[in-house]
Image (cartoon, rainbow, N blue to C red; front, top):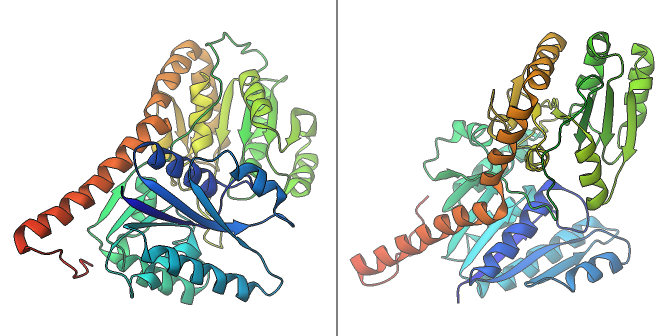
Length: 383
C-alpha cells in the first residue's frame, strides 16, 4: 500500500480553503487505497475541538501544538515531517510553509514530492519569501495548480511539470430547483469578510442596482473580519438598509441561506499584499443548489464560472457591467439555474479525486518506466 504524507498549513475544524482542500484530498486518497498521514497545526487553545474532529477521520492526523515562541512550533513541524517522510512513498505539500518544508525534505529523500498551489503563496509581499518559494517549487517533481490563473502566476519560472486540477466541493444536501422572485432579488456572498473576497465591490455597486431593484437585498455570510469597514462604506453610500450581515454560520445554515438567494456574487480582487483568489469553491456550492453566479475577471474565479452559461464574469469595479449581468441572469433565470447545477457536477470531490489519482498514477508509471529502462529506480531529481 502506497504511503502518502500530506503537509498542510490549514486543516478543519478551523476555517480556511486550504484546510478544506487538504481534508477532502486526504479522505479521497484514503478511500482509494492509499495510506494517508497528515501533518498540520493545532490552532485552538487546548486542542479539544481538533481532537473531537479527528476521532471520525479515516486517516491519521498529527497536529503540532502552537507554542508561545512560534519558532519552536516550526522546529517541531520540521522534525515531525522529517521523521514521517522517511517512511512515506509520496509527500504532498499545501500552503506556504509546507512548500518550504517540502523543498527542504527533498535535500534528504529521493522520493516523489508534489506541491499544490492555491495562489496567495506565490505573490508574497516579502521579496526574500518570494525567492524562497520560487526555489522551493523548482525542487518538486510535480506541481498542481487549482486554476489556470494560479498556474499563470508561475510563468516566470518556466516550469514544465504543472498540472491544473480545480478545487472540489462537497455538500451534505442539495436542493431542487426553485422559481425565485426576481422583483426583489437576493444577492449573497459567502466568505471571510476581507478585501480579497470583494464584498466592498458589491456594496459600491448597490446604489445603481437599487435604482433597478429597490427591494434588493445583499446577504453577507462569513467571518466578520472587516465588517466595520463595510458598515462605514454602506453608511456613506446610504445603502445600509439593503445589507444583512449574517456572520459565520454552520454548514446547514449556509445551505439554507444559499437556498434563499437568487444570485451568488464574488467580486474578488488581488490585494497589495499579494493575496489572490485562487479559485472560488463557494461559487460551485451555490451552483449545486441551482444558483447562478456573478464573479470577477482576472483571478481564479474564471475557472469556476462558465461565462454566459453558469453565470457571468465581469470587471469587479464596474457597476454598469454588474447591473447588466444581473439583469441578464434574472431575465433568463431558469436556464442559468439549471445549467449552473449541471456545471457544478464536474467539480464534486468524487470527480476531482479521480484527477488526483491520474496525477499520482502518472508518477507511479514514470517510476516503473525508470525501473524497466535502467533496472533500478532512477534516483536523480527530474527538476
